[in-house]
Amino acid sequence: MKNQELLLVPGPTPVVDEIYEALASETHGHTDPRFVAIFKNAIEQTKKLFNTNSEVYVVAGSGTLAMEMAIVNTVGKGERLLVISHGYFGDRFTPLANAFDIEVEVLQSAWGERVDPQLVAETLKMKTFKAVTITHADTSTGVMSDLEALVPIIKEAGALVIVDGVVATAALKEDMSKAYGGNEAYKIDVVLTGSQKAIGIPPGLAIIAVSEQALAAREALGSIPAYYADINCWRGVMDNPATYFATPPVNLIYAYDAALKIVLTEGMETRETRHIAFGKAVRAALRSYGMTPLANEYVAAPTLSCILYPEGIEDGAFRTSLAKRGIIVAGSLAHLTGKAFRIGHNIWGIQQLRCLNKQLSRLERH
Image 1 (cartoon, rainbow, N blue to C red):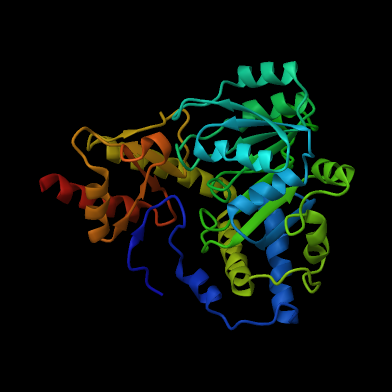
Image 2 (cartoon, helix red, strand yellow; image 1 turned 90 degrees about the vertical axis):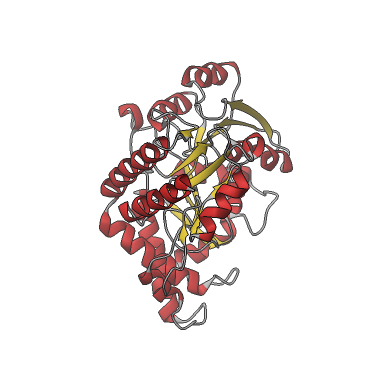
């Protein structure tokens, strides 16, 4: 299936032919042995993606469901959650925690900047928190968190590390076996993500990976205020996909399995290097047109950028002009609405940059 437009929003990203072909495969019953074998393989590939031997969960839903699953299965009513926020989607953990009567405290940076790790350390010394959330890359600001600095600080304080990987997973390494700071006890406990960004399939899957320590936290909670989001309800399905709890999105699982084969064949080292290089190239190209990335290069995410308009550029007219030429970028959020646009650095590589460069040159001439 030919993509008719150059889709450059932070997500969904363009879908490649191999994944379209998998998505268009004949639908089998969710207990059919042929589907069960594919689902089993997808689960095993998910473990490889996060380099974990612990549990992973792949269910029908969005990244927001994955956020909810990560929180409700680890932090109980009245327990404290610390949120490290670099933008709109970091902030979203607050209403989510409030919905479950979890006490939440937020360390929020100015948009385009990071929260100082020293502030995180000081906060964790003042109070006890059950878990701390880190948005690996925030879709609203294009800011990437420094896991190397944050994970040791959080683990030293005895809290669980929950990483929101929605706009980072499969482009940036999220290795759950990595010992941060050289300490074997300092590892990521939960990674949550969705299917429609660097994984490269359409929206519709919520994915989380959970460490043994996080699983122990779930068991200690006993009953939780969730049913569909309760990982205990899904554990049997993940162990044996022929088991029924709720009907899986069969064709999305086909696509997910195909996408993970692409990701793992390329390798995370190569993918991360490629995204870093391409992100820098996109931002450099846009600077040449007087457009300024919100995040400086030190904190900029390799997967997307939030770009501030130069004076005189009207947001709606700019994005409409690009759309007429088959290039789709996203508007910005919250107080930056109308003042910036967001562009995903997707899997099309340097061809994407050349095409965008060409269209921006045309706009400049007119």
